[in-house]
Length: 154
Image (tube, rainbow, N blue to C red; front, side, top):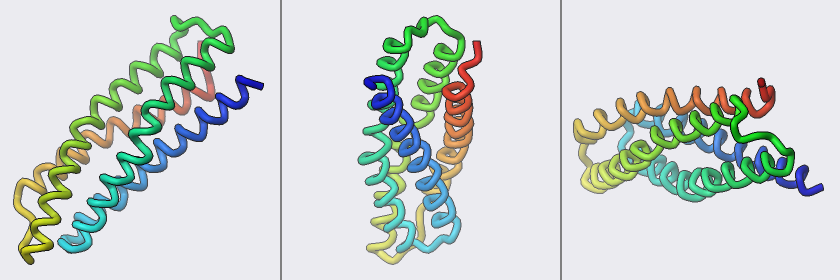
């Protein structure tokens, strides 16, 4: 029973991680492309909040539950699918950390522009480009991890 509960928590948290990531990215990107400064200010504030509430929580839960399931199931840590899962997870995390930093600055720039009734500065758009460039490989890394979790190839 322990294994099923941990597996359920692992799947649930991976769903929150992936869902929050793809949903936040969609709204942040398309709201930014609208160039509606007030909407960007609101959405970027909510994206940052969602990252703190959901993404930060799940990035902790995922390895804890994953390692516990590995232990309970008796899988060797040297299994290729486990090693690849952790490598891709750390890669996605390495992409996510600068994205969070940029999101905080983008949120602040949007808040100031909305308050002052001005356009977003060029730095916002530069950060948005890097934000997208880092989000794409992180997204594909998580998709591959999902496949590895389900298929568990030898």
